[in-house]
Length: 505
Image (cartoon, rainbow, N blue to C red; front, side):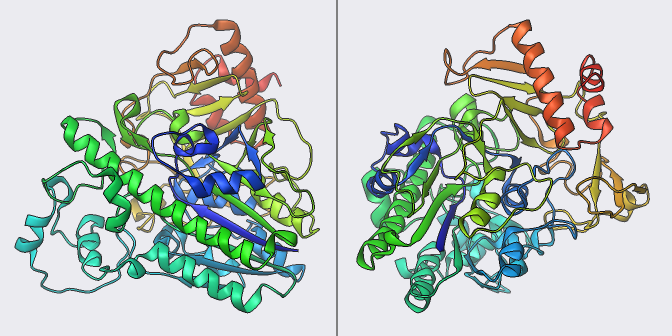
């Protein structure tokens, strides 16, 4: 068996033709869909970027225990498990978060890896004295900063070195993938993870992909929305969205090159292909840009998934059952006949399995549950006074160590069913934590518990009042949290009668 796993970042399901998207052409995603099983009810687990990847690698939900952070010593990542079974894994990525403090244990789980530089705030090119005034004239004011060690300023510098289409990091990732396939496609027993940061913001694509969506904008580079409420003028919003359309079009083109390679070398006969994303991205829906700051709406939580298994061609069959990101690890293991670790929550996509519901969320925010018909989003009564702890043996945030102020309050907690006998640091979340106002409780702009009927209101435009459904979904949420071995305060923070529901099960 051979497997190619293509992972995009921030790819919106509703933009793709296979899921009814009509705003932009996606002919190569349509080609892919014609070959694959198309999963119609696939969801995120833990968010955002690195928490999502931890779920994918381990097959276990982590957002109730930990925010953005490295793989832990007790995490049994699927590339390691494949390695022990004699299956080779290779990672190709331009996702620079793997090389920050909060992601630095992921890439070494693979047998080999390649890192393409230059995306977003990757600390790539050094310019001690940039021509800041000239650069200021090129960018919209909300997209300019000369302050060092910020994503905005580093991205401005990086872009000076990305001039031709071949220079774009995602283009380079696919070029490296074709090089890997040229050398290895006839070998047996390998998995290639081809991962590109695109279409994550900033939405920077070669000019030919932007041309079909030209808005006539003259206000400086505007392809990086803020995380938060929409307050831009309509023409500015249209330019931001047009740049997202352009970068999705580039992703579609690159995917098409991979499909051409599969066609040219008859790889469909013996190579599995899985294509998905980590989460979606709001482009003004619900009056918000991006993610993290708001309720976890369908545009972010409900994501695309395409699976091709050469032993069982699906030819565009639709799969209706509930699935989520934790199912990827057991699926990759199953493709190679490798047993998953005990106690994981994911279920191989290759095997029939029905879920009553599933959980998803951000650490410190709402706990969210869906049964496929309804979504219920339960927030703590007060985000800033909730009792919440990080459980970890790897005390780093996204790009910082845990502060000594945080660690001074830490305790040693007993081992849990998922920690393989290891005791854990139990670190209280405090307002001065480096993560608190970036992607933690202090960053949230919405905190109202709500229930949506996705059949009657697929756009989640109006929450509904249905006490019986709330009670049923609360009980389901409590049961799933218990199955996840969520800590006691994870129940208490959601308020009465939730702790009683959990205790009664």
